[in-house]
Amino acid sequence: MLLGHLSRSGLHATSRAPHARSQMCVHAPRWIRRSSGPKGPVTQQMLVIVPPHPLVSHWLAVMRNATTPSPMFRNACSELGRLLVYEAMREFLPTVEGVVDTPLGPADVKVVDPSKPIKVVPILRAGIVMLEQAQQVLPSQEVYHVGYVRDEQTLQATPYLNKLPARFAEDDLILITDPMLATGGTMLQVVDDIVARGAKPENIRIVAVVVAPPAMVKLSEKYKGIRVFTSMIDPEVNDKGLIVPGLGDAGDRAFGLA
Image (cartoon, rainbow, N blue to C red):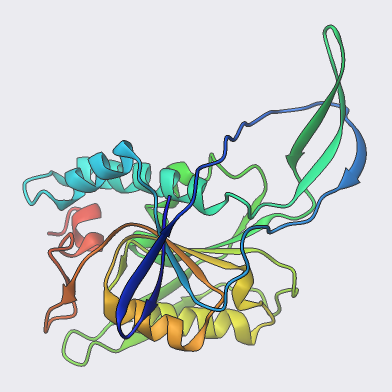
């Protein structure tokens, strides 16, 4: 697993061995105790995590290709969403330990705590595409949509939809999805709003297909505890606010408007 933190001097990466994970559906369990979460190393710097998985690279290549038709682009985006959300939930989801009865006897088990649903915040338009298959990964979730439109001249984002709850609990775990983090203006507004409603930055995970240094620096300067999961860190943003080489306009391509 590639991890990094952003500073003005660039991305600094370290490695972490992956952990095995399993998924199980249980009926009539006998719960013993509740384990804590999220877990993982404590850091005072924002981490940018790029999972070294061949399927992540494959679906990113499909999305990068300018000749990829819209339906295939959208499918690739949803596949990447599922893979990146899976990685983002590692050492993040709260779990419950207990005992279930198999056909041959009792077994100790650990499952995702259904009383602590992940608060999922997709940024429209394209952020919702990343959840089309990713929602299958999350056993317990609540989805709150937000929508922003960016002025093509000033590159400033303006909200047009906000379905966030009035307040978040301090221990709420929050997942934000948006395929492209270029200048970081939209994401910073969303995180500002979420934190203003009571959430803690260290309990926020961001999933994006491609990110660029301007967005990462802007986020890291204000929110040290956030972790960003992405398939690629591209080198720059052009004068139109698009990541280079990037994907083009992910929203237009996903909805057949490019």
